[in-house]
Image (cartoon, rainbow, N blue to C red; front, side, top):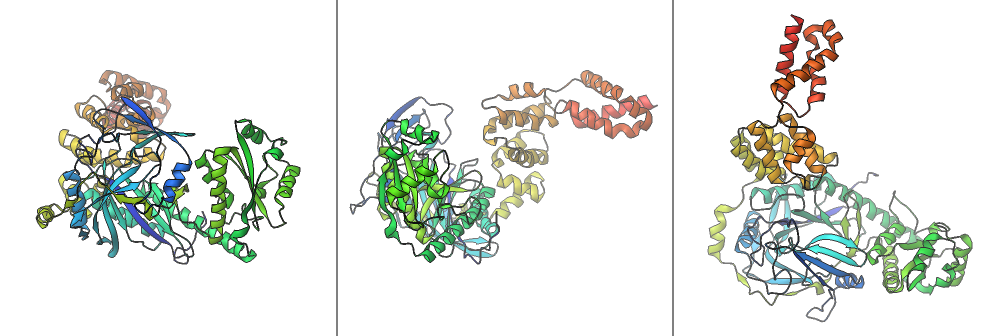
Length: 633
């Protein structure tokens, strides 16, 4: 990726941290906050937008409604009830969750509201059965100390988490209700400037403060960051769903480059004198022309029922839709990603044609139909008529927005650290009061009762952890920042295994496996506890832990015993161990005769390759030296 100067671009980044709380129950009912292992029932809904109190519709809600999706919800006993199904009014707000949000407010020196009002935020992407998310402003203002600097706090909210997306296929979405209603704290920070790695320290510091409270959930997906990114002459772009710090760094760098590329395209369009009036001022149904095409892709699209092709005139854009200021950054790609939300993959533009089997004479006919000039371009959209029409309007609006450079929109972070279009930015019509829940008074006595529970700074917690378990500061920091602090402490207390060994396995080794592509989400805490228990009892060797971890992260639903069997990690008897070492020595007898005891290191390496995870390394080394000593003597 090309290196850009953040200061020259006036890069600004604002964070909204969404952290699940470690409460015993959900925010508006008594159901448990845990993932369901299976679902018992399901039901189907179609969600529609509602007007605000002033009679306006939110643009983000209207965009989601234009997709006309059917939504299936799956429920499991114990993790959801009639509240999540929107068949029963919400219960009172969880006292435990409210207290945690107030503690964070006190820690950040924010001004707590005298009265807390629950609001409804319109969300009709299917992630909530009600068509809205319940949220409440708990505090505003305050500051976060980051490396001697103060970062302002905009707001602290308490809200319910969304349902868990299980499947997203054409025209249908499936969600699990086990996550819907889990308490979340949302902390929005004021925009900061600096290099991406410096900005990342802000998110790291806030995340550490939340974990220091020991009142938050841990694990993949329990903390998510929405990032607001802007550069000079660009609008604010919200990127949702950043879950890891290394992903955050990539997202900031990618957005900085993407936005600068769009600004460069806008400057070229301005130099050409292109105006919004000539973008989409002529739209033609060209299905009759495309029916003659020899393109397999075109034929496939038109073979579907009630399908069509629309051609959009884009005045003055010749060469601009396919222009690539940076690798992968171009308007054509933006359009292609956007129309996928209408379940369409048939979008072409004149800068890339003839191509895809669409011939030059077909392109000429379309240009003639649209009466295009030399500097004009066109965009071709194909698919079902009821989806092509709204997609065509969206494309026209997106190309008009290209004149200003960076449109204000909401995007989603990809696993690779890039971003894709999600929906337009929401407006003021998105929020309205919740009528089923009374206001909550926050008294001085309540705040005073929480004063001694305010979380200590992160470095104090790490120092305490290091002292308690005799860890060095680096390892203590890694454990505290990881998703495994809770299981580390449980194993350290329940076994005789050195805490340093436990910590290194749960941090350095698991991080290494994650970087190799292993799915750490398949490694349940109960499984980790069981593995260390077997190590403590002598059933397995310490060298076997990583192979067992690997096996559990390869296959979903595998038991610890099955993983031990599959890796051959059962503790080996001294007799069998001796036979294997005898075999290793015999295979390398020439080396033994030449080097004598100096051959120990080489033989040890070959023995470990054969015995990986099947016997303790120290035991192998001692037995090997004993056998070599007798042989050499």
